[in-house]
Length: 143
Image (cartoon, rainbow, N blue to C red):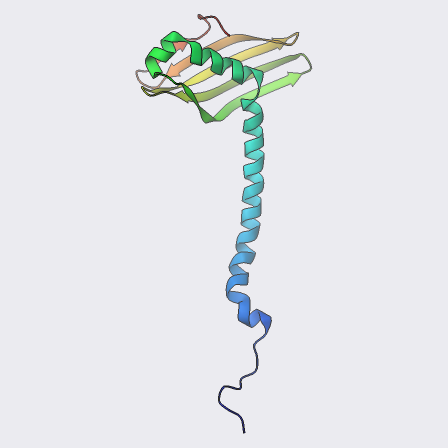
């Protein structure tokens, strides 16, 4: 005599499909997203560690006129756009990035050439968001 609860045992798939399907769909998306985030972080990390970025940020932070407009401390944004090409002791860079301080924000534009291992800026300027005006950072001594 069989009781009413004697049903055949369901297969592993039958018991676990409700979590296997979402995990199976989300795992590839998370892996691809993580890969792109890693590449993104590496590229921006390399740009932020470049001599052009470091020197331009130091010039922006030490400029008295920019300090008066934005306040201190002047902090850079996360993204650096543009390009940096280096071949041995020569190269060219054209980058821009956002900066902000307690009083406002703006964008730093830097164009520089590298010859004999030394970067020389052709353009180093800050474009303020409000009031909309441009500050030439080359007029002050570059650190």
